[in-house]
Image 1 (cartoon, rainbow, N blue to C red):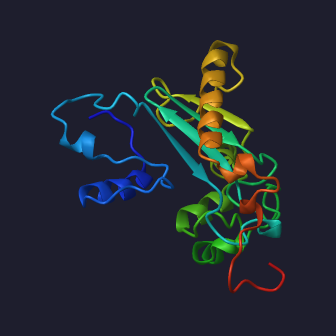
Image 2: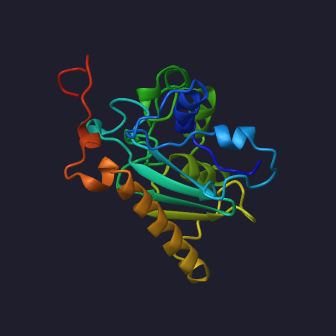
Length: 216
């Protein structure tokens, strides 16, 4: 089966399987018809793409406890990403480590404490190793891919670039595809009243939390 599905489709699917009506407030769709079908390949003609999003992973990853808002649309051949705040750091504030000559916290500290630097990325030995070797010439491209800022728009041709390494947004060859996917993404977000598009200011910018430090 080649149909695109989203994690949020599970809720309506469980309700449908139990014979319970799916509330209108749910924007996802049941997978029962796909699961029960004898067809192969594309079963539901409406499931040719999926929309995903991100706001935040960790608390206090950026000054002001700000999120990193992203929305994306994935089709069989392309991935288009819209970064709403490209001036922010997707992996969290670098805490001065965007200067390749700045001294980094100890390997142990970065391994154990995500907030030592780039706090929206979980602590790990891999993260610590990349930070400690970030100034080496053969590491700088990989470090930028993992920790650097992203442009407002990203587009990847999955037919030739399945690992999303070459951002072709802005390439005239793909201009029509980029516009089509961007329009489809924004239409879907507005249709579902995504606060990131329909609210100003957006509630996600300062989501309520309990137990934060007074200056958070």
